[in-house]
Amino acid sequence: MSKITELMIRKPSLKYRDVRNYEGEYYDWAAGEHLLKKGTSVHELFHPLEHDIRFIKDEQVPLRDGVKILTDIYLPADTDEPLPAIIA
Image 1: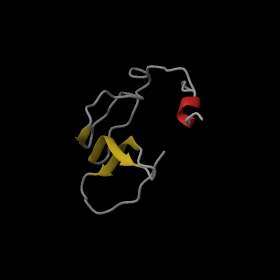
Image 2: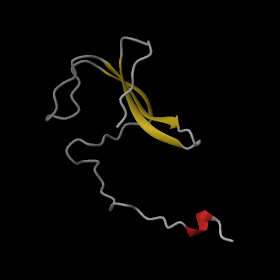
Image 3: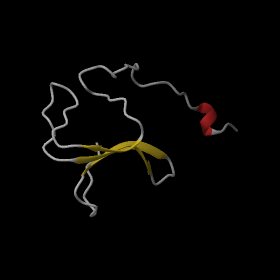
Image 4: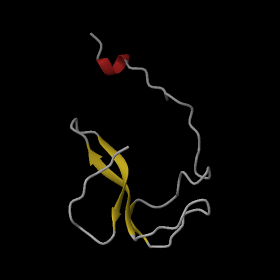
């Protein structure tokens, strides 16, 4: 009897596209926490920030099945209180 993992076919669902320099969708920042100061603009097409923001890049989030995914987190810089999350 075969294991289910031996029967699985792994292939990308979409063709990979490098978006590092495509309309400001990707920024090559190191993993970890960054402080984005008020007035920062990541690209001339975007408005400058109106407030300081804590940006945590590539935070590991464990799922119920034990798998860990990486996500980016944006928080107000002036509080450490628990806040609701918006996940896309």
